[in-house]
Image (cartoon, rainbow, N blue to C red):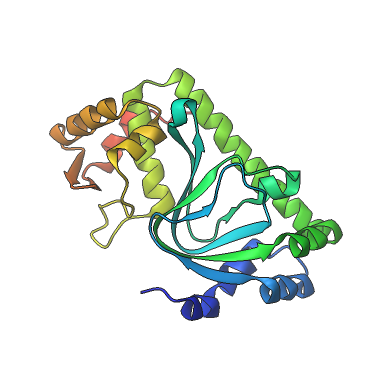
Length: 234
């Protein structure tokens, strides 16, 4: 069971890693200004279209960032893990959020107020460079995903999505089960296909004994075969 008091004791770990480029004084200032909160599964951290009042650092748990597409259909644009920052692009750009952050499992999240973050960002050149690197890295991932959506078959994209989930959230104690629970609709959303297609392909992967399915849990049985199926050559 998560509690605000417990998480506040440990949240400086990730703040220190993310803001390692900042001066010790600025890191201390950020740590003193932050607020920590526990969100339950399904709760929304911030809503698409809302105005940003700060940035968020994920301390524990899992979060998805999604955009509302045509006819209100959800499009997952990013999966977030402990140590990641969210909400910074809208804050820096001074524009409303372009995505909704929803908690996939109980999560502890630190909030850093807008004024404190922007003030430090304007005076700390090393931190500014670090944020530029974070934004550039995210842009590179987005460009790669767009290319794959346009050029790769759905089967390859599903294999790649399963590998991405493994890299993002790791494996459970059996060293085979992907350590995140997603609905078939969410998986289809990540792949960029219809839910029916995702269900059919997951069943094919299972028949080929590449993965095993238990409820919403996915166990990778043949990792090298899955990598081959993803066709990840650059």
